[in-house]
Length: 115
Image 1 (tube, one colour):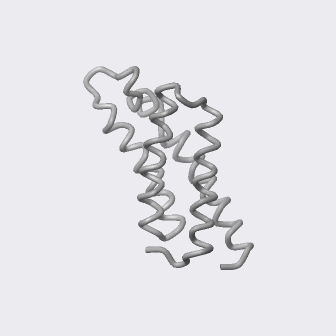
Image 2: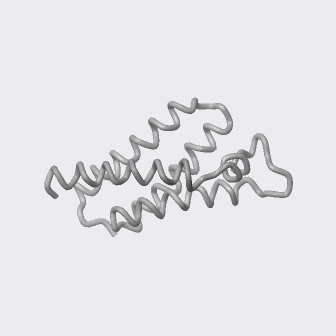
């Protein structure tokens, strides 16, 4: 895979992350996904799962890889749960998400194509 294509892919993944973490998350999911401050009547794992699936869908769509979409869904779920539990800061949360995008691009570079 050409270097300029990898850079473009990384930038698209960052744009997808920004869309999924801000306008596509909304106030409801931002609050409901937190198991440490639950919204009454809303299972936190459904809200966090839905938010994580939005991210995984964006990665899968951009990369064309279902595997990377699943990896993004799982990693996003874990990272956001750590942030909600105040085990990591907001800035570390965002850094880890960006590092995941870098890892997805590196995996595509080494193993392209991925399923």
